[in-house]
Image (cartoon, rainbow, N blue to C red):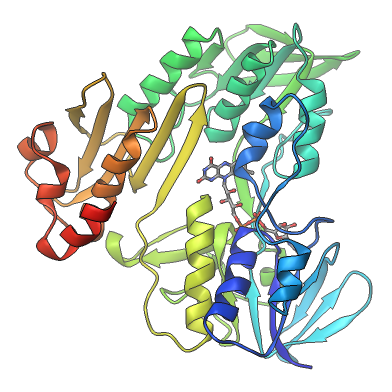
Length: 414
Ligand SMILES: Cc1cc2nc3c(=O)[nH]c(=O)nc-3n(C[C@H](O)[C@H](O)[C@H](O)COP(=O)(O)OP(=O)(O)OC[C@H]3O[C@@H](n4cnc5c(N)ncnc54)[C@H](O)[C@@H]3O)c2cc1C
């Protein structure tokens, strides 16, 4: 029976499957996932899964019961090995072949590997989190390579579990990708306060094993000895199937504003795809963010059902470290100047505008109360607003008052 097949039972794949049913699709719908689990959320893997006293179950996104109730054929442990695009068929590792009328690739991303280093731990899936939990022992010394979100969240978790932590980042500061310097400085200061040995601006010359220990020889001659070595050096889009099927790639599976690949019957969504963003001059971007996976899953379902709305959600992500919640809306330029709005309680919201004065990003690290302010900034970015720098900087000018009238109703309910 032909119908829609989704490869990748993660956030984007599950979100698309549910949205297809909500959108009225009644045909055959198969969700194929290589992992042995039903779809689950990854954000808790670097947070609650490492911190709770007992290992928590995965945070399910779609249970087998929910899938059955929606008549979604969820197949776990079902790795797709190739796609025959002209014949519209997918081939599974168990030797079966399934026909499709439309295919969605939601294959996610995989951690970039440290070349030539043995015994390094990575974090992407539930099993990785369980393995890390058992190894993050109090009194152990953990070395983390990479000062992005994953590396920093792991550093926070390791400290909270009582381990000594050294984090090495070759860039001049942490969170170089997508976070303004002023906000990254707040995060770095919090890690220093927690006792993390944060080494930035220094590369790694060589990694060696000495029995159970790892020796990190830094480019400046220093030597770090650790019981556990974790790498959080980014993730690569999972494009193997797409490449072999001859689909266009460009820092991920290349899709258009409607999340269509270069094959008219194949779509892509989530971490695996790169798309042109209408709010940012059509610049092709690839996001590794939970809400993007959710939103693109829903958007691609609409496209598959004949919808004509381009995907243009404002990028947004968060990261929890200690008592800080970092949030970024829009696309921040790491080195561009920011306009600061100092909120009561000491947190600052940092805005960035483009050369034409359009608001393009807002970021902050602080308490949970920030959510409302970031949400309003997100609405301003969506409206292509050009607020004056003075208004952005003035805490007594409510962000809500800068919104164009149409969005005011939404803002009052946020
Ligand atoms: C540890 C961790 C913490 C995170 N924390 C945050 C956070 O705090 N905030 C935030 O905004 N984002 C966070 N993220 C990012 C967010 O979780 C991802 O952006 C999101 O999971 C992407 O969803 P996806 O469906 O595109 O990909 P995935 O969730 O990676 O799902 C893809 C699925 O496809 C499967 N697959 C791949 N190839 C095949 C194949 N050939 N056959 C069958 N199945 C296949 C994979 O096994 C996988 O299960 C975090 C990510 C990680 C790893």
